[in-house]
Length: 439
Ligand SMILES: *Cc1c(COP(=O)(O)O)cnc(C)c1O
Image 1 (spheres, rainbow, N blue to C red):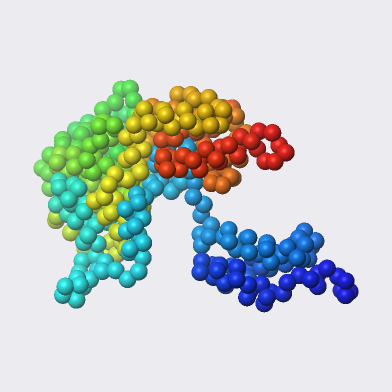
Image 2: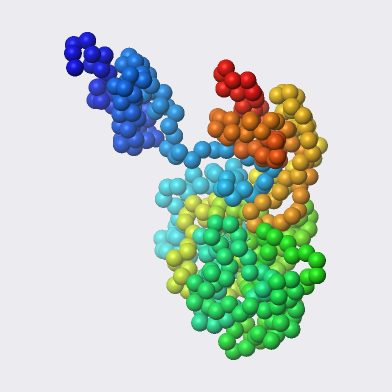
């Protein structure tokens, strides 16, 4: 290195670490992350990719951009309400506030009046029971799969779980009902056929070896044509006569019926029809955080809560707080998207199309992950050339459109109206394309 070597002008690490930009970044980022950003800029300068005089500004810019999480918020323009790859349900403002409130020390397991320990999650339980009075008791666990595993383990380990062949579901991401039940130590006793199962099929399978009867909502497919299934009420009577519990895995998590989804089963109806326990997810149609809901008779829920596995699948304080706020607060975004006013949706779509010079086409949204399979949510989309899709995904804010054939479709159903301006700006940028490259 000579005296004139420009590399000598690269700011030293200790100087950059002491800069105001680094000091500000330390509120969000760990020391090793700050140091890595500095190192990267210095290396680029050494390779000649950056002027030595520009290093400090580059470090400041990079640090200002970095947030504490590298997860990126996405505007969901797919029209799919519960989008598994986008983290399912977006939380309501009330749930977000509850998360923040619960982030420090909280009385999640303490009675402040007496100073003694209390049952965990009482507030979330009370909210669930108020929203679903048909339940005698409620327990919150980590997710829907955990709820089902806890129920079948506690009620049927070493015994048989009687289930229809038409309900042996696989949902995405490694959930296969038969494998999950086998893992609990219960044996699966399949009855009926893929398309038809009758009450007699269940009757023939029940006996001293039965741990529970399980009815599973086929939440992501439909069996159509020559079909038969036994409803919860008939199954409950049969199970009751044999003294075995009936578990209903609802999946989607509607606590009460929703007229927009007339075929989607709900917890209240299943419990009123005689189910001993229903299990469901918190982050599907309920619109809350990832959680598993167990609602049922006081005795059965107590038996599940006492099982050692309950401790392994318990919900954390953040989940409990967000769930309580979702259930007892105003309608969460999932509900708003499902019930979007068609006239307003059309207005917003027209406005976006006009702003970016594109056309509007009819488009059906979907409920998505684990609910109302095959039910269209009629609406509209702004149609762009397919080349816009990648630019939308990688832009700021990131926008996920639906790609269909050679078109990139933007459905506003799941975009909060307050984000319309940001969406319009993102679409304008994507349609214009990167500088020098026509859209
Ligand atoms: C989604 C679903 C599950 C699994 O719930 P997770 O919350 O994803 O663990 C179980 N059963 C049914 C019917 C479902 O739809």
